[in-house]
Length: 408
Ligand code: GLA
Image (tube, rainbow, N blue to C red):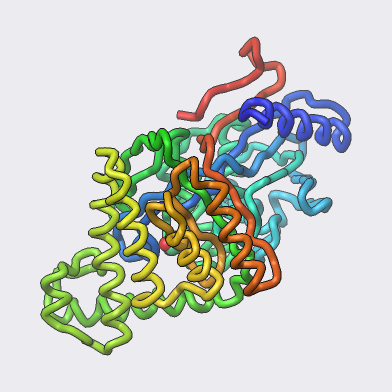
């Protein structure tokens, strides 16, 4: 199915569902925000470092309209479940879909940006719990839809920060800024090179001609993800404290040069040093990889991906056997330039850079090996036309085709 046909289908489903639950589609606004895959630069964002994520074609969609009272009534098509609350009694903390939306609503309400309640339907096709940022997509989709429906001003950077704050405060995940930033400010046809300290960013065209990225979802449970993630953050802080005691100008691992790192091998402990080494070297790799992508040096880009995975596996220790298996099998296929885990690790997905002609061999080899070891199949998501967070439709629109463009 072509991209626009797919969008039309989702849009029709959303509007049909809206009409079914709420009677008509007057005053409705439909917007979406994509999930993301990270091409390189993992566990660098909360160390003030560099990342290179890219949005997916999969997104969270919302069809909303204002209400005349202060109530919020939402129906999730994925969970076949209602959530109702009022602006005066918000859902609070938790990890269900309503808590992500509720957190964004609470923050907008706190800033006096919501003139009334609202109602609508929510749908997403970003795989859940796979490390492809379905939660960031849900937060950003909520914000973008409400922003366009109620017409308040908020920069993309501020929106990303607000959504990150929601994740910290309402969901309890102490994530970096990468996922929310990528979902809100990523652009179709491009990867997003972001400096997580200054939030300066650049859209890097992804023109791969005969090559493509394929995401392979291990479907392995990410049970340790939250505790392991928080542990890694604490280990990085211990590293910062040590290097700061040598050079007080150091504020984050971003500031530690390779020279300084190697001047103190195994300090303050072998484990903390390994964590620091990953971050210091991963930052360099992102800078190299961005240049490689911009200059079309895909073999070098693939090498950076491979080195990144090996470092996440051996130094940062966030890989998992299913991910290593996929990576090893993928790398053995002729036509594969690079393969690495993507996101936090502990399960989730691998991203592979592969020649288009080798795609089916890659899939067959990985399926066979994975089935043999785990008795189940991974999922494959070729990274085709990635998308931008945008308004898709508004009723009584002045646009003749009813479609609006990407948000500014
Ligand atoms: C998760 C977090 C991000 C980032 C990655 C690892 O996706 O949400 O902020 O830290 O892990 O790179």
